[in-house]
Image (cartoon, rainbow, N blue to C red; front, side):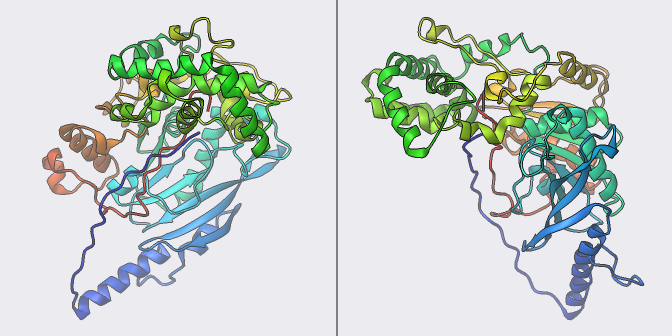
Amino acid sequence: MQKALRGVLSLALLIGTVSAAGVTAGAATAAESATGTKAGSPAVQDIKDRILAIPGMSIIEEKPSPGYRFFVLNYAQPVDHRNPRKGTFQQRLTLLHKDTTRPTVFFTSGYGLNTNPRRSEPTTIIDGNQVSMEYRFFTPSRPSPADWSKLTIWQAASDQHRVFTALKKIYTEKWLSTGGSKGGMTATYYERFYPRDMDAVVAYVAPNDVVNKEDSAYDRFFAKVGTKECRTKLNNVEREALQRRTALKRIYTQFANDNGYTFKTVGTLDRAYEATVLDFAWGFWQYSLASDCANIPVAKNATDQQLWDTIDSIAGFSFYSDQGLAPYTPYYYQAGTEMGAPTIKQPHLKGLSRYGYQPPRNFVPRDIPMTFKSDAMKDIDRWVRDNANRMMFVNGENDPWSSEPFRPGKKSRDSYVYTAPGANHGANVASLVPAERAKATASILKWAGVAPAAVQKDAGKAKPLARYDAKLDKFDIEREPTLRP
């Protein structure tokens, strides 16, 4: 769903000397980490063999990752968890193995799977293992033939439950689930349906569209976010692009012809053009900072090509083509059947917009039937308000998706909602103000059972247990579709 922002930090290296005795101890620790069995046991079994002994688990490849073992795996899952006899499909997983004596983080983006070694923020904080799961129906983790009625939040939560149940026999310490955006939603839904699995949940920028037809929170957001000058600048780009529709569509037509893009799903190039333009301001606040407004041209002074390039760099004119939409069919299907999708009024486009915000149905091939279930998100919201236990929600002040957040209620226990000032869709614990950052970090350490004694006495001393690694901790915002991906 998107273009990524990357955080860049310095890599700290610890260089020291060890005695001969230290070398021996280090070798024993390394052996334990690699095998998953304490050194000196009667039979030391390699961790790969232990994983592959799980029925239905197979290995795609093992990749090098210093300090870890990293595996890309397939796991046989039922297409229908209510009727396992109706067939299976192969679901991709990755395992970043550190040591079976460490806690484990269960991560999902809610979309496809990054098959390179990466650590989520909670994994770095607790210095643990990480299991990452590809969401069902995102290719290649899609049943064939695809029965789309089996793409539900409960079926996906049941996928996670089976993975956890299989791996918990090996990774017996605490487990935390996490994810950002749709991944944060996924972690929350999993907790609702299987509240006994995880020891805690850390959900980032997770939208909570309780009533699909009531989206005034988004209108209020866009009426006050940033400065009036910036809001006006962004709105004028959208207005100018619709006023110059004919000229910019000529650029779009050539662009589509050059790249072989077609528009059967959305219907016409004109519909795709307007959908992209209407995503511009949303996409800006989702992935940019307020300071980036200085880079947006004054619309009336921009050439057609400058206007095109500005919108393309943020919203992406390729997205609403058949080729751009295809990877996100599962997202739009879920948005149009259970999760809901936001709509904003955009009064500045009155008289210029032909279609308004188009519904998810317009972005899913017509041969896939869709019926919206209005009770699905109400159930999730009610459960979080009444039952949240050791759940953390981290939102961004300037992130449109954080306009409708989860809110644990009075019956919740040890649960928190944090908002990172000035942050976009990449908000995380590290972007919180210092006092809240320390408190949130201390909670994660405590929930994972690895809080140092000093942190147990003073949360202000909390910090990640793992040293920053430039490759493992490379920060990519999970690019959820900008409004309509």
